[in-house]
Image (tube, rainbow, N blue to C red; front, side, top):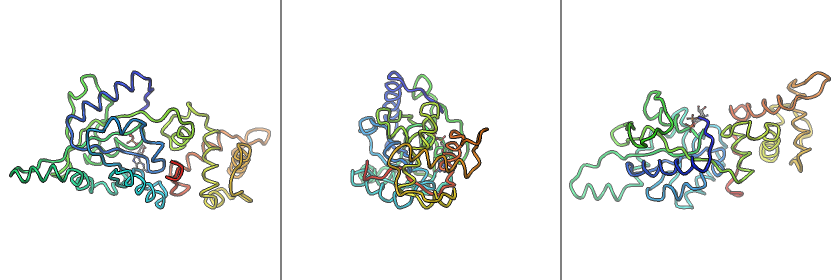
Length: 289
Ligand code: GDP
């Protein structure tokens, strides 16, 4: 879903989530495990403050497992319950009900003490575009339902999706805006496909990605594209352009005159990264969060 975020839209998105919060017990904050910090909405703490929250590191199948473990510890140290999932394959999804119940333990116990039968936990998924909200909702629903953006009237016409007997999920997620004011976060979002390529130039995004990959996953890069003499880091933009040129040459991204077609090489690199062909990679670490 492509959304142009303007101040008016942000205010509306915030208000719509606040309306939905009245209906639920727990918030599932969905993040992209490859960029957990950059895929967080800057105001999510404030917006969801009234409800317990479970941070979900999604797309874990594409992320570096060691860094996913570090990020889980990072969020837990901030007092946020955290769980790792792959909404596409369903890994970790069936534990969501028990994880949500853990957060509401005291409330549920109070109901039990009063002789009441605890009702299913009601949850809302929130996150920026492209983190996998619809995929997770469909996974929990066990079928493909049309996920629409919010309609006027906010909570009207929304449905509950039942998952087992213990969890109910609102079928419309809370869509939040990504970070705008941090250029590095912008590159990370673009690298994973969360920001459209027209916004940031694809060659520049590819050069940013190369810098991260050379520093952290150099051997993978060497093997995949048969690169010789790759340095341990790329000190400047020109060094990144040189690597992109080598990839272009190795992969036959050539225009007439024998020059490298940088745009084609950049597209190829980003496609390989996003599809997981380069292996499981995370583009930011808690050390620089
Ligand atoms: P939304 O905008 O937050 O609703 O995101 P979508 O559910 O539309 O997902 C965006 C893209 O990410 C789609 O191409 C999904 O197939 C993909 N996706 C979602 N979850 C996962 C996951 O856990 N692993 C992988 N590999 N891809 C995922």
